[in-house]
Image (tube, rainbow, N blue to C red; front, side, top):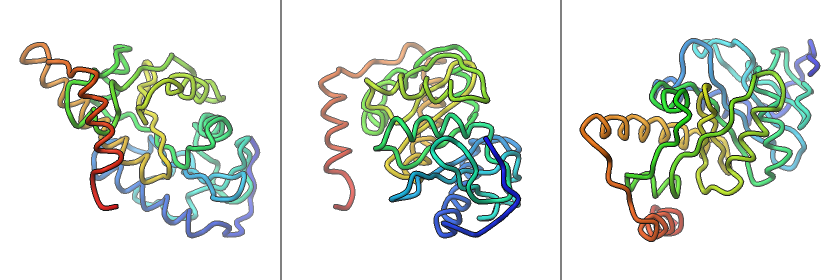
Amino acid sequence: MTDTPTERGTHRELREHVAALHAELTRYALVTWTAGNVSARVPGAELFVIKGSGVSYDELTWEGITVCDLDGNVVDGVKAPSSDTAAHAYVYRNRPDVGGQVHTHSPYAAAWAARGEEIPCVLTAMADEFGGPVPVGPFALIGDDSIGQGVVATLEDSRSPAVLMQNHGVFTIGRDAKAAVKAAVMTEDVARTVHLSRQLGEPIPIAQADIDSLYARYQNVYGQR
């Protein structure tokens, strides 16, 4: 990946939106220090925007969001992009339906990832949002597109918008960046609740037919249309 010392201010509205979405990560205690990131595909272009590497959440403005092409090369912005840029780029190249991504190390979900264990679908809220368990992806090192490959492969046959990358943390996808943020928030919520349930005993699984019914209702009927 290359960097550029110039700031032309392109795609500023989207960069402002993505910068603001990072406040949801701190609001829901999904990130620590400068870890974690949100990205968004630029509509109608082979580009995406992503948080700059190591930029403080308290200081994050649109100028801390960098514009990259789908190979992860910087095309506008003065901040070096996230160390996860290659992973995000791989997902955008291989999943044209994805308009936004989030990565966090939220503690309860990361604890499941450290065990290499999927979060079983034992809550109606999980059936609604994930359509089944939150799956586990393979271990992969940071720096190239290996994580992105794991995300795409793991979610290929899953309705879940979230994957727990083994020994790492949470990666979520969505039709846009806000949807990916919601998935990250929900992942940590169910990770915590299912963990607490297991301290009391073995959680009761939900039948697949009921999971399917709950998922269809939530995705197609729930909320304002």
